[in-house]
Image (cartoon, rainbow, N blue to C red; front, side, top):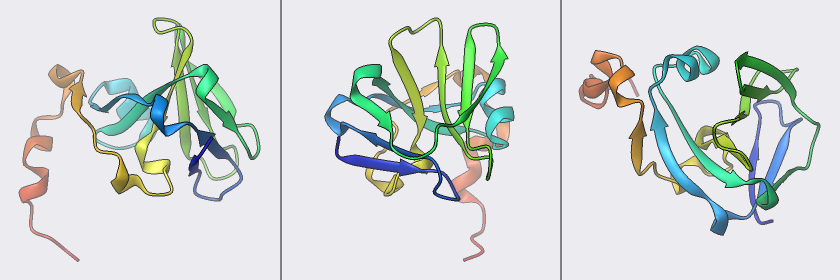
Length: 128
């Protein structure tokens, strides 16, 4: 296990085998938007044999039938989700990576649920 991710407060840490990552994507589904309080989220999948928690174990919440979301009970950072529709794998959030710029999404999931204004987000004036 070589790559690392963590929550905002650092209590929950994830170690994983980067060579086993699949399907890095942007998700537009309403459920992910509500869980992360953002207009979209970026994530990736790992087989359950390719990762482990190295810090505290996250809290969990069954957000809909067959879907469990895991998050830090201290700072609230969303860390992972599992769905019965994809057994044997867990999905994690790119924003939790130690270097989130190192993993670019390769596709969009649930694009039909995208908020109409997300397409122009990068053309908005910058407030650096």
